[in-house]
Image (cartoon, rainbow, N blue to C red; front, side, top):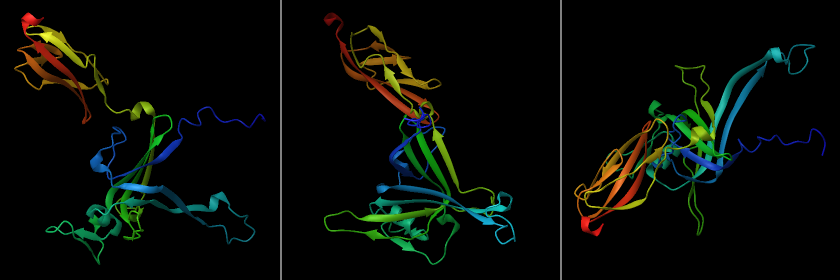
Length: 274
């Protein structure tokens, strides 16, 4: 192996793996994917494109060399996300059509329109994928509109596929903003909120107490609850047995709108049963 034939040690840290997911919303500062934000299941992968269009002002100047950098001008960017979606939900069909409405009286009816409205442009469409090191890579497409219309392809003993080609658009109110933004999120920033209790189950006698401790992310607040306060109560992790029976103590951690829950099964015995 030659001296220059070397793979950088961090090559696989930022390597994107698998296909990722298409979303209607995503917060890179709190990278939690909500089921409600997933547009659809996809097949065949997802293609993200951000292609610049250049003009060469010197190309027809006599005696000027080709590709003079001082004469190069960036005219525009073509930004898009293309994939094949699975399913035929009204929301997916409307997205693919672009200029269309879901009937307010019959939500199973989707009606294409002759006129394009500003509300047809989605403020954002996101693609989010995993990195090999546990981080995330994300792409935000601004002022997004499906431009190739609706196309449903079916096959015998197969599943229907809906083609999606979603283009980003420049706003006349923000003409300098390119309609695509990229994020590469390190693993420590991609970790979701978690909470863990020191015990998953306890048995205590009526009148006794036991302390549970919760381990969670820095800055998260923790609240405690009992499913049956006649059996056991809890205050800041201190469980007090009230009467014979069973219940569940839950600890809920919250941070930046994210929620994580851990639980402990509690069995309270009569005092004489120790």
